Length: 339
Image 1: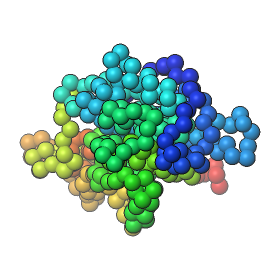
Image 2: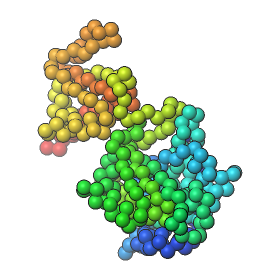
Image 3: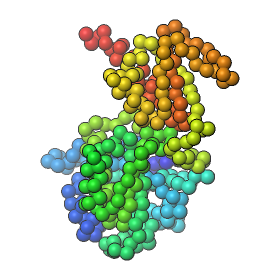
Image 4: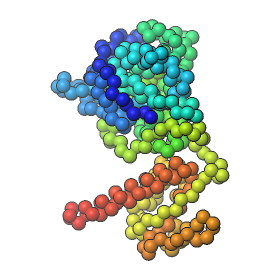
């Protein structure tokens, strides 16, 4: 589970970072209450504190990443000694999810003001590499890969048009960034792998967090489905046909248009987000039952929709389709009163 148990994480004054990291954080928002819990979404941005009352908190961010169990044990330390030190020196909340039998990965949650969170990731890499916290990374330092989980709706902002943002982050930090194509099972999150020494990870995390906060201020994210490790080993994003399944649902004929959208935009978006094949059949089409026999037909005025894909992806597609239908129904209910 990757819930956030309440911990006594009163904000410690953040000690001076090394020169490279400090330069990257020079324009960071002032640290607010590092103990303030972020939302379950990836970012929880408060209004910018610049030019306003000192009572306005700095923008908080909650960053999640996948780590192998071995690294998780190093980060936690005996009796939690290592993770407590990282919390104290960074001013960020750092939590590691429970180990799931049969799954080699756990979830690392770090939240608080952006400068504290980015510093925490620099300290985490130092801890994994067994390096001193108060010295700059040296050329011989081992590169560590941090696998951030980013909502699919936000990945475009991080990548930038033609990859411009990723290149900018790489140039500024010295880290290497790579965004996965597919989403994690049963979620709307993709992996952003960031590889580099401690200072590079520190700087890159700050840039990524800043982009996420700005994107969240422009358009708050909703309907994000977060990835949770299961006891089944993680399967590749694309499977052979032997693992594909099919689900059939019916939707009202008069709402087919809202599902398809102008030029097929809506249905293509749902296909992309769920990584599923979705076919809206012709009126009167009947589904196939378990033994190949015709399935029960829908009610009059309903259209058959056939969804094919991995079970978790099918589930997501169904949820997105029903959410879209519910949005349209609510819109129609409000219509007459709005006129």
